[in-house]
Image (cartoon, rainbow, N blue to C red; front, side, top):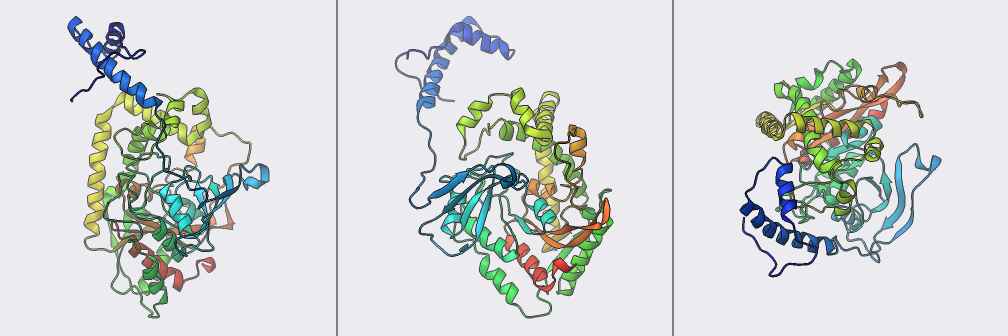
Length: 468
């Protein structure tokens, strides 16, 4: 690489020969005396620039507090947290919104989503919504399936991830959760499109040009008995084959699929054997990259809005206090990441990345003959919350959720759009008298999120899941 150095030595930036020698020795390198002398000059010049950069004020998106005023900012305590649902509360509303797309709608951001000046949040406000704070939640499809709402994980890169604390850039998605398919479409239309900051976004998807609302409304207005005529629907066999699949959940999904067939959908069974291996890939890619990028706040090689202070406070490794604050899920990611890094290195991550492409191609091959794939969102009913104040060790805590991501993580890896639609109630596994919610997952081709919404809208209009 080319170099550039200050014309004169700058006080406080000189790197000594001993520092160069120790740096080389730390990483198993041996330098000659001449090389040590040369690198003292080269690294001193670099050190000057690094110190100068650290002294500059950071560059964040500008915030217009007159256009987007905030009131009532606070962290709820006790019962006001609603069993831990709220991380913070506020009322944020645009004084002069640009559209009425989300008029009279209230929105909560996930607790890892920044608000001030972030394009994603600004688009929500410009569409007329009121942001009420941040919810301590996770995922999109899993809570949607468990709570009886619609959740759409959009195509990877469709919605900007700018200003959101990342777990792993190739896996991260942000998308809408709402009571109905139409509300999901409205929120997606408001937030979709490139923002010029997030490097995972296609530049030809400009904000305001990606439309969903009209087409979904037209789908809902169709009076035909078979509004899905001509839509080819593949029932993914492997999506029902996990050993922990609850038969009641499987039956609810198959009943919903039969409903799609009654609406004119051309339903056929399809096998994609690599779907079974997606969990293995997820278990390795997520911690290997997620430890560095998500937990240590150091996503090298990406063009994004980053948070330098977060990375500086965390440092090169987690402190005991930071590790203890994570909880079993975060601790598991961190220790898995360290274990895989120390025992297998970058070669394992590279191999996994290549196999993700193979998995993607397997789904894409199926989509050459199919329009959507369907399967249960989660293969068992919601699990019972642990009693407050009780301690569960990492293995016991994490075992409660084994196979929960069996059918969802695959499409985090590949980036296909995937929607969870509520399709009825099933008995709880520990008490058949308790009825819990379940969802059907509808997966589409990349950037054909609209088709997932239309299929879901047709079923939602025809069937009242609250009575199933």
